Amino acid sequence: MTRQGCAQSAAGDEWWDLCAGPHVESTGNINKKAVELESIAGAYWRGDERKPMLQRIYGTAWENEEQLKAYLHFKEEAKRRDHRRIGQDLDLFSIQDDAGGGLVFWHPKGALVRHIIEDFWKNIHLKSGYDLLYTPHVAKADLWKISGHLDFYKENMYDQMNIEDELYQLRPMNCPYHILVYKSKLHSYRDFPIRVAELGTVYRYELSGSLHGLFRVRGFTQDDAHIFCLDDQIKDEIRGVLDLTEQILLQFGFDKYEVNLSTRPEKSVGNDDIWEKATSALEDALDDKGWSYQIDDGGGAFYGPKIDIKIEDALGRKWQCSTIQVDFNLPQRFDITYVDSNTEKRRPIMIHRAVLGSMERFFGVLIEHYAGDFPLWLSPIQARVLPVTDAQLEYCNGVANKLKMYGIRVEVCHGERLPKLIRNAEKQKIPLMAVVGSKEVETETVTVRSRFGGELGTMSVDDFINRIKLASENLTSL
Image (tube, rainbow, N blue to C red; front, side):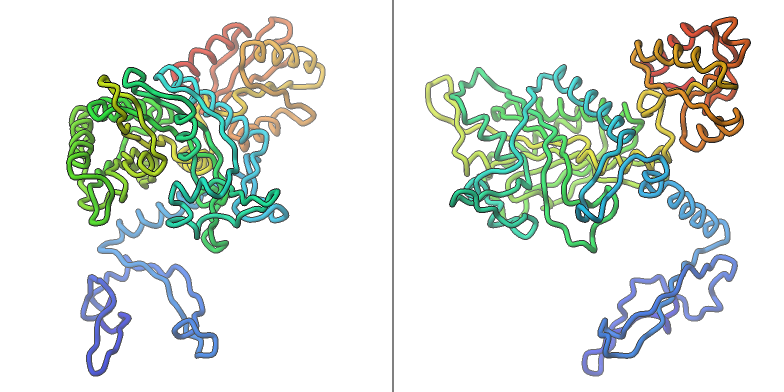
């Protein structure tokens, strides 16, 4: 930007340059082949509609033409991958004005992908020693007074409901519910660690102007879990969460992360000793894991230190996803205890953690990461059976029924000429097409076309089934 073109602010006789730069003395110093005008828009001076209308010009400038081309390609690719457009094109989800902004409707295909993700999530948590919970969507408002949400989070909470002269509140968090489950019985030091997990739907008020597809919504489902443990178990539990996080993210094709460790802020609860133990445990777990990380000094929550993990998508964009937080506050607020080896009451450590973050936001990231081309194991429809003519329809239905018996997600499409059926399957990003003509009926075979691998040739139905199952299990394509 030129110095003449920068925004400035006046205070008395002094001027401050409000642009960070870098600057050049003249537009003549800018490579004209590396400049692009992007858009224009009107804007009132100082945002006041009673003041003159100004013309706002958006543009971008780079050192050379290659950098500009790379940037423009990135913009086009990001536009092509926009989850809102793909979600509509593939009929995955919608947000209905009649129901209200920021509330997601999962359509059959999108709901099927969610079902696959949730099944995987539940199974891997059960194998990792977690117990699953289901808890209510509302609770008495007093619960949120105890937790502190009414004091610190009220602007993001919906208005209370009066039910039989008692005030109730839609939940913005799942944590207090899991604490109530913990408090429902006495605990001994022998019980620890205690791990509970829930796909819990929460509701948070967001301004309408901030809503954005699946990325910023008002109702969403967190893959929430809490671990109650002893002081000397923190490191091992954190390491276990890191291992589980890696295992889950790799399943979806994410293997590049940015990791941040946030330490004690100026205002916090808990004594120095426990903060030092918790922070050291997080550092040791990360070191054991071998992950490089950055220290965000003083960036922790007031209730404990935390680890934040950002995943990198196919375009190199980073998305805040997983978080692991040690909490000294809620155990104290809810006065949760256990009995130690000396039969004395002690307070456990509480760890909050989410791997995917929220189902809605993670689904949006997945759509953009894959540009709607979901891998075979995750695709809502894995195969589409296409008859050359309706004379093969009965055989096609038989093939589809056999695939369904083995848990393969399949559908039969007919009523159009074969080239159009193939084009429609391509547009819907169906991974596999099984074409059936009179020859295939006679030999009890299918001719398979892969979206990723091209023509795979003619094979028996059993061979087709086995290849789909093997590819799905190994997270590969045909």
